[in-house]
Image (cartoon, rainbow, N blue to C red; front, side, top):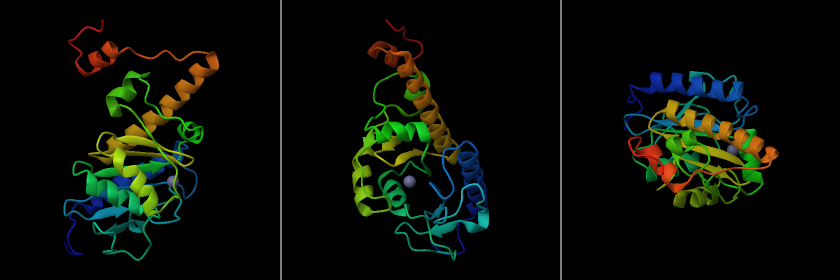
Length: 217
Ligand SMILES: [Zn+2]
């Protein structure tokens, strides 16, 4: 890996900037909250810088690091949550993009100590299956990365206790859509609770989602 590599950097940088604006515009982060990264073709990682507002970030602000977190070609400091991103990329060869945000309603569930493991909404089940709750650890620490790791084998999105949410994907667009879907689902489930009842799908109904030819009985 050399500093001159990463021919796909411009495209990834434009995508990260677009995702950051969308997170900010939709209220999924406030100011410098959250972080977004992408794995480039040469294995290096492009990540948002520490402390920058996601509503104002530009392509030149992004920081490229190697798989151990060493800076390759930018002056700024990478996101404080880089350790978690590196751990996810190390553990999941299929993941090319990570979105970490503090979506207000989904984070409310995480503050209340709840996960999204009950099958309620088809689109969430299809997009990322169960969304577990990762126990709390201080943001930005190896301890948090350690707690996230056991969930990575089976999950593409997770809530983080008293903190926020993280979604993964093969592309930035997929990771973003999973984050948006997670927050949207949280709002719907909260509404259903206010109405007094959350009905869950049966096992057969969940199975039928994965194979539409099969009747849900
Ligand atoms: Zn955070």
